[in-house]
Length: 336
Ligand code: ADP
Ligand code: MG
Image 1: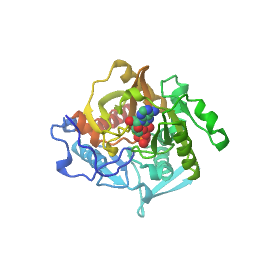
Image 2 (image 1 turned 60 degrees about the vertical axis):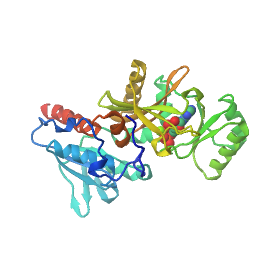
Image 3 (image 1 turned 180 degrees about the vertical axis):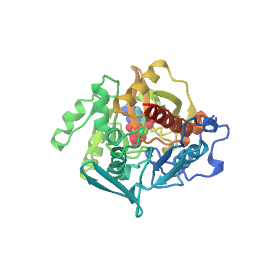
Image 4 (image 1 turned 60 degrees about the horizontal axis):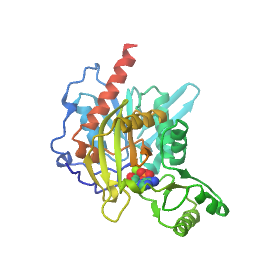
């Protein structure tokens, strides 16, 4: 089944204003199954926009399982920090007793959003993705360094600061083409293919002129403009899709016009995705892999992956699976 490419910007991968009809037909709604946790949970979704597809699906899945759930705009949360005494207020009222929080923090508010999330963690709320894990994933360089030290395969990557070092920096990667990426870019924005050494140098100069941090990578030509999005929830890959770029484009992102279909992963790809999510400490992650001549390589790990593309392509109720993960965790916590 081919997935409809999202048409509006969202969090990491983007999200779409939600309407009933935007829920893919044929989605296998695990959320209909009854929750066996009692009393019902008090959940919060940290998101700037209740109309986004991912936010609405999580809200709907939590309600379908009988939980009390609300969407909180992270920028309207404010906090008091005192020794062993943490308070969080929202639009003039104290927030208390939240059992779990689902962060959907966009890349433009990473700093403030993760501060709010950390405050909720300090106040005892469970979250599948903690503030520190999100920060690790969002900085591409830091993320790749952590994956590399865990021995996980990735495209050869270089990083540098001084213009005098550009020629030698590029020689660390070998012959062009090279892919140059903004360190905190998303949705394929700021990912550029440079076919010749001179174009790599020009793009690097342009990024430096904008004071932007960037990475340079070997180009995996044999992927033919396709990548794999593996959706990890609680130590399992629950859904996967292959995304392929439109003709004339090398970026497979759905926001760049890519097309998605459900895909069966090999055991090695599955293991790699799980290992990457675990390395960063994320219980919910969109792990992007690329198929290369030397096996699967990690491109990035998204801590706030969009639900629309993956639910449409795979037919899996990803939102329901995230709520079920939270229930499992809190059931164990309460049993202790
Ligand atoms: P973003 O965070 O903007 O999605 P990615 O690193 O995931 O950035 O790159 C966007 C897309 O560009 C990928 O989905 C993939 O299709 C393509 N791409 C990225 N890096 C490479 C590479 N080294 N070789 C080939 N294609 C790449
Ligand atoms: Mg990506």
